[in-house]
Length: 318
Image 1 (cartoon, rainbow, N blue to C red):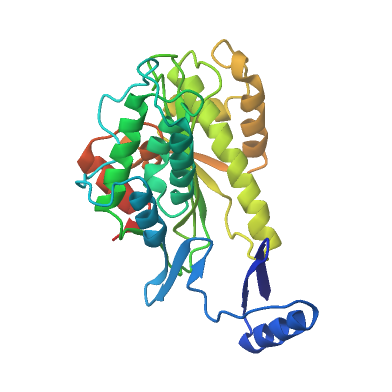
Image 2: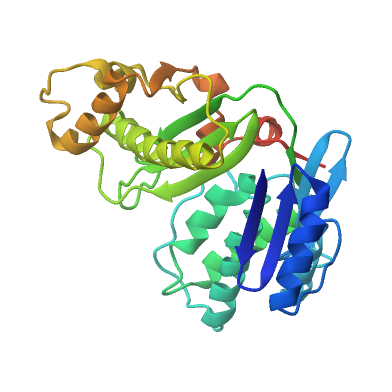
């Protein structure tokens, strides 16, 4: 079994047969001018380390460059990227250098590849790309100060015999008091490793927490199905149906209820989508307590102690 990952002119090649890798590279080199850099240790700004515990992905070098570019290399570190009571800032003095703001937000989005715990904070500042203010820039500086204090943190991928595919789905109802929109997010684990996640604002106003949670459930389910198909194409089939965990009992009951009623008629498409998948038993929706809801970190501002606890569950470690 051989996999080749191609991004423009950069390639990662891995195989169950090490001799085949050598032959494959030699064959490619006869057609194209290649440079073999040996074992994987750096790819598109991502540092890769192989240890006895698994594969460690980090972006320490990339973060250092970002801190130097924003004059935050000597900033005072803090323990979380957001603060409680954070609200959207709709007015204020415009930022003189809007181009710098957009550039830094774009760089922070790239950092989320190995630092998923800042996804919620980055999504918040991304919402003001068009007309950033000085206050918005202060929010970015807090994220940079957090990265300064956790520059050595990285994402761990461990070898596991368990082939389960589990998604945590969550929504923060009316998380934005200025426009009453909700925030949804998910964390998707394959073999106990975080492989996909998201934090985004919902496009429409949810009229109840159940509606917000159910829309988040549909979004997480869509990603889970795509990942399931990808895993199948890679010839690593699952031994059990994927599981989606949500902390809203009403949303869970709604996924099993065959009757469309007053509470669900305005989310009819999402309703039918999840119910159809559940009926053929290709997906299982289960309840998880709010205390064990890992996706909380993608949907709302949490206290520092809980933030650090959820970060460790994402397998982000120093």
